[in-house]
Amino acid sequence: MILNQKTGMQEEDEKAEANKEFTGEDTCMTINIEYEAEKKLDLPYEKIIREIVLAALDYEACPYEAEITVVLTDNSEIHKLNQEYRKVDGPTDVLSFPMLEYETPSDFSRVEENYEDSFNPETGELLLGDIIISVDKVAEQAESYGHSMERELAFLVAHSMLHLCGYDHMEDNEREEMEKRQKKILELRGYKR
Image (cartoon, rainbow, N blue to C red):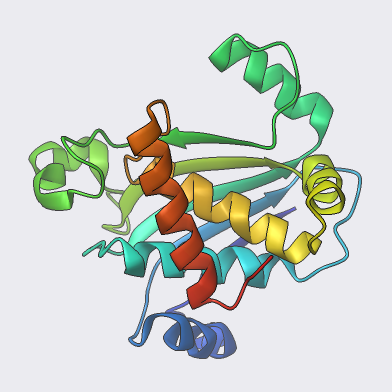
């Protein structure tokens, strides 16, 4: 099932109002959500994904309307992707596939230099990338960490959005910076442990 949430369209007035709440302004961006897992998450996953994507872009001061795809899958599928792209033989909670390269994280100043590769030619939206989340891991980790599945999904989206904005956690200082930003984005939307 593919849900294209184009918040600027007339028939999407309710979603546009919700996005105004998250960004403080009119937002016209595309968040494609593909639900490919058999296991259904019994939570408002579309709302959580949309609000965290928007909160992360606001927090990182992205000056462009953007396009992002979020795929909700299972451990089996994310295991295959993890093996193929990271050479790690096992499932993970989230994978991020950024479309942009940054000199420093969230430095959007040079993205127009490669306009053809960085923007959707039909919509003019900045192509940030794809997020793949295991719904199995959402449930497992929520139970393991003792918080709600809503909070776990929000955390994974925030974490992955920071990767799409150029952050990494290979070094301690990078990890600490990402953790600080993730926490702030989640707090802005009311998600606490």
